[in-house]
Length: 404
Image (cartoon, rainbow, N blue to C red):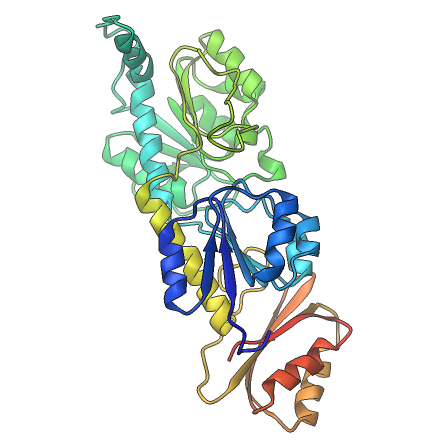
C-alpha cells in the first residue's frame, strides 16, 4: 500500500459511533454496518477495505482471510478474539487487536450486583411480585458481608471484582494458573479444588482455551459448599450446563447467575433457549457483562486508537497474534513495514535491497514469533515506494507497505 492511498475502514455489529468519529478525524473513510455479516458477505465486502472492525458475532474464518484483499488489520471491539482465526490472520500478515481493559469495570459491577441479587433471591422475588405474589420472608436470604468470594482468574476483571468485594466486607480468595500479586487482603490458593471448597460465591473470569473447556462440571460442582452460588460472566464453554442444572435441582447449589452460554442467539431477533430457564434463583442475562454505554465508548476508542497507530506508524503494540513493535517516529524519513516468514536470511535480503538503492537506514526494529517476523524500518530515501515493491518480490515476504 502506498502512502498516497486513502485507507477505508469497515465497522460492523453496531460498534460505538465514537470509533467512526475518531477515525474520520484522522482522515480515514469509515463505513458502518449494523449486523454481523456472514462469511460470504465478508468475502464480498472486505476487498475494498484496509481495516475491519468486528464484535463477538462476526466470524473471520480462514476462508475469509484467504480472500481478505487489502485488509492489514482486524479490530475486535470486545475482549475475546476467538471469532477470528488468529493463525490464518498471522500467516496473511494481518494484525489483530482487541480491547482487553475497557469493559473491566462494567463486568465487575455486574458480578457484584448478581452476587447480592442471588444472596437475596431478588430475581425470584421480583418475578413473583410482578405476578401479584407477596413473598415477604427472610428465609434463604443472606447478607454478603462476612462471606467468602472465590475468584477463578485474577486478571483485569477478577482483580477489579476483588477490590469491590473486599470494600463490601467479603473475604476474597483467588486461583489463577499464573502467579498474580494479590490486591488488598485477597489471598491466593494453590488449587481450584481448594477455592471451590472454601467459597460461598464462585465467580469465573477465565479465557476460552483448551484448559478452561468444561472447567466446572459435575465433580467441581460437588466440591462447592452446600448452599453456595456460581457466577459465570467469562465464556459459555467453561461450565457444563447440564451438570449445573442437576446441582441446582438437587439444591446443592443455591443459585447461579450466567451471562454467557455455549450456544447463543446470533441476533436479538433469534429465540434464546437454555436448560437453565425457569429454575429457582437463576439469573440469566444475554451476554451483557460489558454492555454499558461507558464500556462500549471506551472500547470504541481503544481499538480505534490501535487502528490509527498501526495504520499510521506501524505500531503493533497490543496485537494478539503479532510480534509487538513500537518504534518512535523519525522526522525526515520514510517508514517501511514488512511482514515475512520467520526464516534465516530474510533481514539480510531486505538490507541488501536498501543498500543497492543507496538508501540510508535511520532506524530498524525486527521482532519475531514462531511463524513470522515483523520489521519496522525508517530510511532516508525519496524512493520508499519502489523499495517496498522490491521487497514485496522476495519469496518469503508476506506483506509490505509504506506508511509515510
